[in-house]
Image (tube, rainbow, N blue to C red; front, side, top):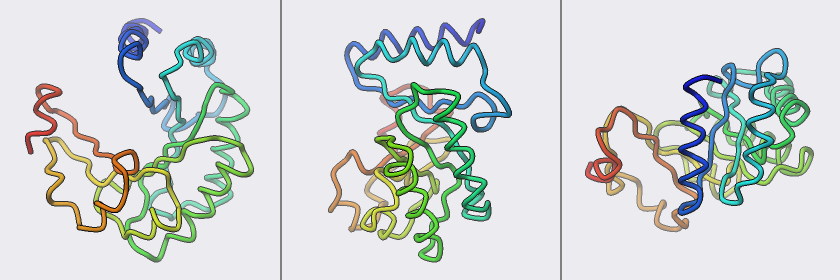
Length: 180
């Protein structure tokens, strides 16, 4: 609603020239009930072929129970049927939580029928998250500055660019994002 609608209009316009994955986050996740503004907006978004909508769910670095996280996924599917995938924020980066994340990955794809899982450890994680797989794409950098992909480990080169993400913020221009 309000000024937020202007940002969505910019996304709709931009999708004519570039594919866009939108992380939808009405209330640090799906919330306690469906938000009518989001329901309408996400339904409208389905008209734009190059927009993929993914719902935000945090895992607290694998500390939230699987049942709790899966319940958030279920709410996304029930309340916002336009959602096409899930963005798992606060993914653990160590090998000890790969099985946890793999369980969620399978739940999203097989049990809920969604097409995309993106995870965000915000730093380099062990390769097994991608090789298992426990994610379709992992965000290996998050920060208030441009990132330097040359700092990623050598194993990253085995994966297509669509499997690796970076989340830069407070960067002055789009061009500056790649100037790290």
